[in-house]
Image (tube, rainbow, N blue to C red; front, side, top):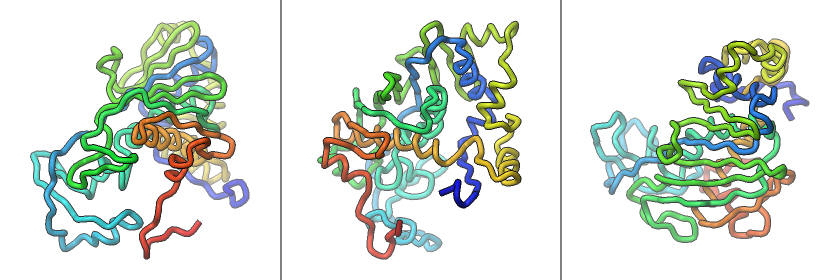
Length: 304
């Protein structure tokens, strides 16, 4: 559709553009074979917080709660004051920790790191064939994948999920890196070396070798779709000018978020999900397949 309309759509995942270009340089090293063939990527993205019981509260006068919920199921407004910035609630900012509105850290930090992993694998325009829940901990009990307690946060506080692609590449998504020996970020493991990258550092033997054998400018520019790397907003305006798609394009980010959503379906149902990346459908599991869409509340239907 974008090819037909020439519309320019940029997704706000600045890790491709900024953060001192660490992520771009990590992917470029993979493209130049600096760690051999990339086989495994491990992402550590953090787990969601738990809240305990949050009481039903009066809806603030300035909030249209019905409209805020939109197509999501109608439920009580809940709020509990805490020492934190926002308090515990079902609303602003804290919506991240309710499956009814979001997907916990899987779709929060996962949106960034899974995107970089797919970019590094050069598989950002396809998807996995299998998503397996190795382990997961939720703060409330679940039945048929649905949380049974409406009074507290329900997204996973701990998890380990693997996504396997058709070519055998494996992506591990963890809540915490404490047991892995590295920080929040990505560990890229190839046949001859490995690289670690996050928003604060880029390390590994291949990184040290850049001092005497720098990356090719052609590699960086190709990864950046022919534009000069370095600024997310500038990239958007340059693409508006020549009607090309930004480095953070909608197609690849749709694919990355699909991995995150499939991971959440897997840990909620506690079983492996088989995925057809060509048709973009869950296969051989009718119950899981129903989770690709949900019933929309009357008055807030989205027409497609």
